[in-house]
Length: 222
Image 1 (cartoon, one colour):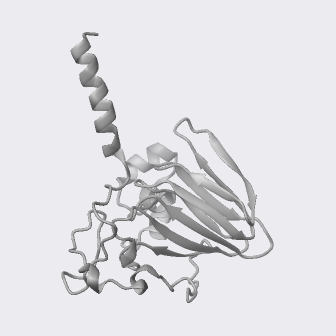
Image 2 (cartoon, helix red, strand yellow):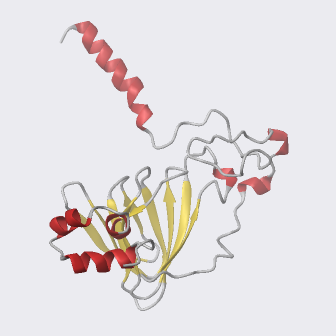
Image 3 (spheres, one colour):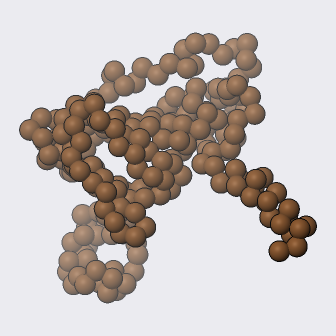
């Protein structure tokens, strides 16, 4: 390889690779969104202007919603509170978010993935079968106990199931302020993908596909 080409390649690798980070690097210490501007919502790109630093207070960096969390369980036995800059403006531009999840006995967090973040899950209480599947379809899973931590690499499908005899509590942290989430059952059967394609992909009958659609797509009535 010619020396000039090698130098160009090296510059690309050193300068270009950081652009693949989950969130852009902040250009100031913090950016608490100004609630008086726009509709009060924050996004991954932080389109809202920041508060003047003289108006920022300690309360902007404290979130009390966890202690008042009321668990509204889904049919799968999961109740979750996801905290991002919309609920906790102090997180804005810091490249992180978090969540709290409760699992009833036998409850599951269905297979899902976060397209923009790696997740670290800390089991506060209970016994949970936890794992993920890599791009070679290899499963990394086992039962974790209270006090243990598991990491789910960015973009890989992962799951949890309470296998204990008591409710389980999980605290999750993400390296993006907007990790995103796609739950596979709802994404596949509740998004409007062509039924014939799903029949061929999963070897299911039209009746079975219809049953899954009615269960997972609220827009489907027949």
